[in-house]
Length: 433
Ligand code: SPV
Ligand code: MG
Image (cartoon, rainbow, N blue to C red; front, side, top):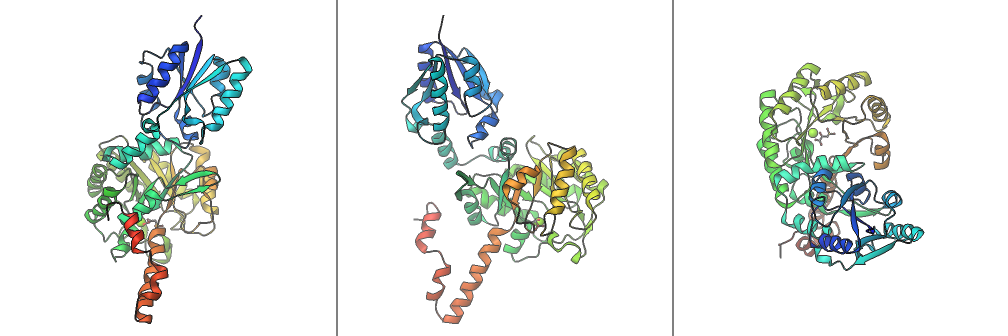
């Protein structure tokens, strides 16, 4: 009888390394591939460009492969225990790094029934990761960028967006990463904020910056970055105008637009009822959502309905009723906003909303309720957290201090401590030298 061989693969971008592993596997017997599902890939803090079914079609047609089964976890345990293979074949690229613990588990499991791990030399220039990094350097097409947000929402516990008001702040969103609780964390994309885009242009946040200027700023950001964008569409304007906005954003490669249920002269939400602001009727706002959904061309573009009931003190019930109505009209997600420092109204909304609706993506902008952590938002069932204005708010105080210092000292020597060096500028922007 042929021996049983198990190979675990993501197989997103199939390359020579995969072929070597499968050829080697075939030499030892009948090959079963455990194809990682999206959840399993997410456990490895990765995402795939292709869906499970698309990857399956490629792998099941390779002559070396007898059968493909899903591998539902990053750990091989479930499949190995049910299959009890004689061999597991893997590239030797998992000896160190985040997969090494799974390797250890595989060795221990195989030992219990006398199986063997075969590792083959894996050249680093053909790894998935390397190919993905090279692709990122080449850039992304508008279609790939647009699609990416949905993939992230489907594959990650939470999606983190950072405000960018120009290309430089977007580069910070693109490249910043830190270690937190033993994991590398970075932002998943960019928020084009109407507040900070207007402020950067010296204008009030009242829809005074026209959509062409807003989209110009988006294009400047997209020229130098690859991550997806959520666009703050304010009220969306007149229904007939919103249809054009949707098409333009989609063409540019924006993944989602958030429109808020206000009407007339829009003011920034963080003013609440301190200024005159009017909420739209449910009926009219639903019409706008529907018109936007009808106007879009791709399946992936998202229209996210932003509920201003808590901002305008209309109560929890109004917020929940509107959420339901907007979703029924086709909204792909909702954003619930609050300007309270205390997060209790957001928590209450999430608990009540998630009781009825487990799957519609929810976005929050915790500018005021900024004590809540990412983990707490995950527990509440929030899908996207937007840090909506922090790049602009942090840059401005330094600029202000430096301007004063140059005047006060009659020279710029003292202001240097607030400035990055010219050498650093040369380093952050590729191609400056
Ligand atoms: C923005 O960033 O422009 C927003 C969020 O719309 S808020 O400023 O909180 O209204
Ligand atoms: Mg705004």
